[in-house]
Length: 194
Image 1 (cartoon, one colour):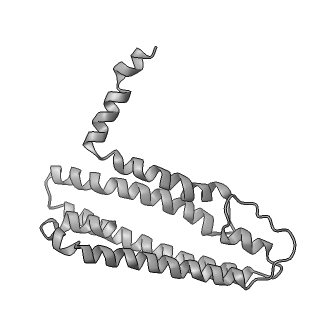
Image 2 (image 1 turned 180 degrees about the vertical axis):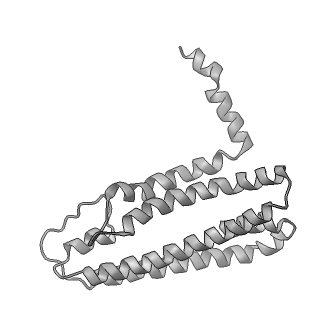
Image 3 (image 1 turned 135 degrees about the horizontal axis):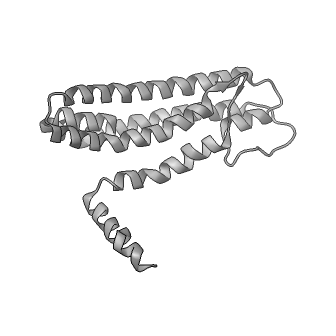
């Protein structure tokens, strides 16, 4: 999405050519293949571990760190490997996002105030969703003291709450949706209910 925003704002006349159907397929496939390989690495690590004892994790979904806690062997090295690989992927993704937005913001200096407003409106929703995902993810996967933090609240936020707000955040940019919400929840509607 950051690349899409970059092309839409910095190269608007070339948007259709640059963001062709083929380019979109390539971007989606690269994301899917990267996520699959990363997930496969986690599965291969977990499959090889010996488990003996309780088979219940203290979490609301089957995340990798609660599973590592159930293993009957020392998993410190595996935790370091997982945190490192996840951290590198997250940092690369975040740096790519930051670079794209730095380029967009530097391009906006030459635009009119109306262009600034439109571009920031376009980027604002994406930045909000990115922050809603990356901040809790950081607190979940950054090592705290000598153990990895697997706080369920942070995991709940980046797995359920951020995706739940995704459609709402992007929908609020739609003028028709804003007008419909004003009609439904306008001040006169609140007074009618009392």
